Figure 1: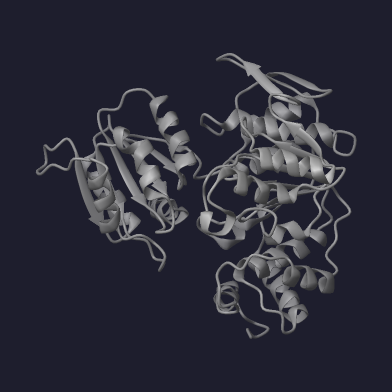
Figure 2 (figure 1 turned 180 degrees about the vertical axis):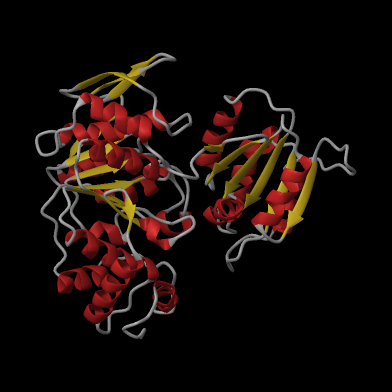
Length: 432
C-alpha cells in the first residue's frame, strides 16, 4: 500500500502488482467498487468502442464540444508518453495530485476486491470526472466492449467505429463474434451509432434485440464532398461546407461522421453551432494517428498494429505522393497478427528497421525479420542495397538508423505498437 505521500509513478507501480492478470474481463468486481464509490454522472456520457478509429472519434467529438464552450472530460487509453494523457478535463491533462487523490479513494473502497491496472485506473478517472462539474464525458473503451471496465457506465450515446480482427484470444476469431462484443456498450432505448460501412450482423441483431436506437452509416447518416469541403447528413440535421479534419487519413471522415451523429442525437442537451463544428474539426489534435512531422525527410507516426489499421496506413501512404525510398521503424506485440500487418505494407517499404520492445509479450525484432523473409521481403547487402532488414534493441536506435540513412526525399514510417511510436516521440521531444 503506497503511503499518503506516494508519487504517481509509485502508485502506478503498485497498481501493476495488484492482480495476477493484466487483462481479466468482467464487470462484477468493477461494478461493486463503482457502487461503493458512488460514481454517477448528471451530464451526457458518450462511450466509444471499435477496433480502430475510436481515439480519433473521441478527439473530434471533444474538440467540437469544447469549441462550443462546454467543459468536457475525455478518457482514452493507452497513453503514449505520460499516464496523465488518459484523463483530460477541459483539454488539459489531469495533474499527478488529482490522480493520486483518486487512486487513494479507489484503494480505500475496494477492500479485498482485486482489480487489474486498467480497472483500477478506470474507476479512478471516472470518479475524477464525476466530481469535476463537467458538461459532457467521453469514454473510450479499452478492449472489446461488453466486458470492458468502461461498460459499467450506461452511455447516453454509444458509438462503434469499426469492427475487425484484433484481440481474438479475448473477443473471438470472427467479425461476427467481435461485433457482438463491441455491441455490448449499446443500451435499450438509447442511440447506438455504428460507422463501420459493413457492420457485422451480430451487432445489428444485438441492437435490435435490446431495443437500442441504431444509427447506421449509409442509412441514418452519411457524408459527401469534393476535394475542397464535405457535408454531413443525418436523420434530421445537415452540416454543409465543412473543412476536412486536421487528422489525416482515409477513414477520418467516417470517424467525423460518427462524432457528428452523436452531436445530432445530443443537440437538445448540448447544442453545437455550425462554426463551432468547423473550428473543432480543423483544430483537433490526436498524436500518433497518421501524424506527419514537419521537416525532411518526411516522418509519419502511426499506431497501426493490426491488419485493418495497416490497410488504412497503406492507403494513406499511397496518397502521399512520390518518395524515393520508404524506411519503416516497426515493433509489435507477439500476440498481434504480424503476418497480416506485413501483408498490407511489404510492397510499400524498402528498408525495415525492426525493434525489440520493453515488454515480455513483445515480439523480438529477429522474430519479425523471419516473418518478413517468409513473406518474400528481400534483403540486400551494402550501402547501395535497395531493400534491407535490420534489427535493433530499442525504437530510438531503429529510428536513428533510419534517419542516418534516409535523405530529404525519402520517408520514414514509425508504426506498430504504441511503445514503438512512443519511443520515437520521446526521442523527438528531447531533441526539441
